[in-house]
Image (cartoon, rainbow, N blue to C red; front, side, top):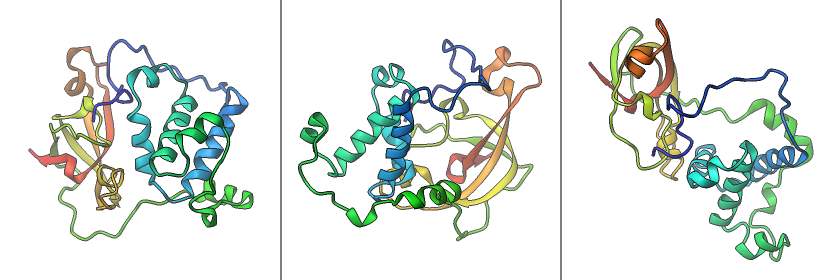
Length: 219
């Protein structure tokens, strides 16, 4: 889907200007939201990809009108409601009226550092040989997925060159919708800037994206 999060390469939103002195959290509640998201993820109701999809499903008004962690908080609330871990009444009142569904999945404080340090690897064994190799010319699909995808809109239906193979990884497009991991080969694909943005591209520029095999076709 082309949701409010799919801003790469769009005009009118201004340049990205990272500030190396910018703090990780601008308010204490942002730190809390990160902790809540991590803790609730350990309940096992949803995958990382479903969590990402919950953020991109926010309305443009909610997405563009919120801070980074404000988006996280709204998505977390929706996930907890969808999976029955809380009710709308509990959310409105801030008071728990029923026991949790999965108390045995509660993450102890002592496990937080380990979980953050190891993450959740998504590489998987390959069930078939890779279709493409470094140096192959490929074109990305023009199809717009109705659900979650990691293929940005600016790189759809564009010719590029495979420069590396990352191995087999969980396919976000299915994993976000409870359709299984369905691992695929993952490639680094390079696109010249002028292919993506025409004459407005910076001369000599190029962009690399990670693309799953189903995103690509031969040229």
